[in-house]
Image (tube, rainbow, N blue to C red):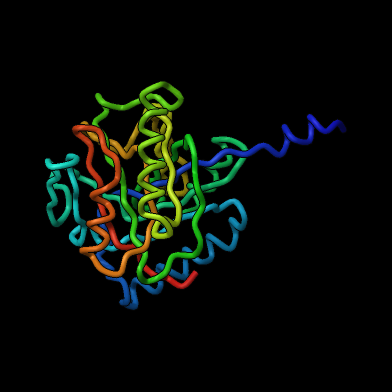
Length: 247
């Protein structure tokens, strides 16, 4: 076997598996939540090294949304009212292809009652195990304003994100950018059957375009950091605290 064939066989890609749907009633710290954590721990143990990141998020009611840029920044508390479904958590898979990502996504416990959006990533910087002072910033963008990865505008935004990361420094623990929303696949499992749908999970004009994972000592500090994330005119950053599940 040649070196080129070995490198081709081992080549992998990153996929974001976003867990979406009606929010769970079990609150972090409750017995019901603990039972759910055990199911996810079993899933992660089975998936092993294929999991390259991920986190469970506190309820959307605790979210902070940041819109605009510069002097036009607007900060609002609570969930974004236009969303019928919310993001409850995510995984990043390091696998060879979409088929393998789908097979992993179908094993996520939430696939039995909610949905998993599987979407290839344009880039991913992995993070360590999240702790109690960790936060996630979901970067929402209007589908009409989406920029294709690799183009001049995308490269310009990449430079701005690099400047943001350099300014914030060690607070940034990971993050990534996504491919176009039409590359997404929705994964559901109903009555033991795998159901696949093309396209993003949101029915509205906005889709997740990327995310950051970072640390902050308080909600105010988390908001201050997220307010500096580069955004296009109609984009927003949704700040959610990460649940410390201990693994």
